[in-house]
Image (cartoon, rainbow over all chains, first blue to last red; front, top):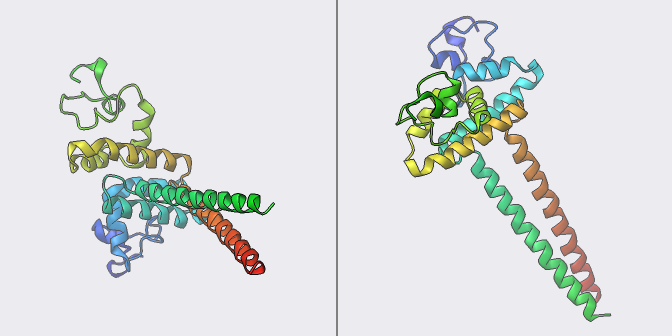
Length: 115
Length: 115
């Protein structure tokens, strides 16, 4: 990642050289510039670099993905961010739970009627 | 919020004066210092201030809460952060869905047997 044409999207966005040991390069390739733009806007390049630096290498890609996902959703929804997704999932669980309760109650009534 | 004793937790942590129009003060009270520590560690004070600044006043508390929740979970789980919660909820939905499918299949078999 030493010359301009192979800079990662983070270094390209930040208009800096991309060193061979750039911690962001493996997770923010030049082919997906949007990914870093969101992450930089929400977390800042320094914070993300520090977060990745503290992790063992084999966990960094998962962390970069979850950080990017959070950043993307915070850009889409500046008030709730990813927490909006959690609310939606909790509502879906609640609906399915209600459906289970309803079906089980119907079975119980039907079974009692057939005794 | 003009004197030292009434600084918000953000200004106290950042060792700065807390002005009357401090954008963080309404959402990061001195009574809950941990909340800002997490947010600062993950997002940075500047990013959070900017995110809140862009929102109308009545949406800022919800945003501060969701940002604080994200930061707290990222501190607890530096790899998955809040996305770990989403995975857990999706698994719960999948389990409930499977239970629904199983019960409906049993009802269908029972109903067919009684025709």
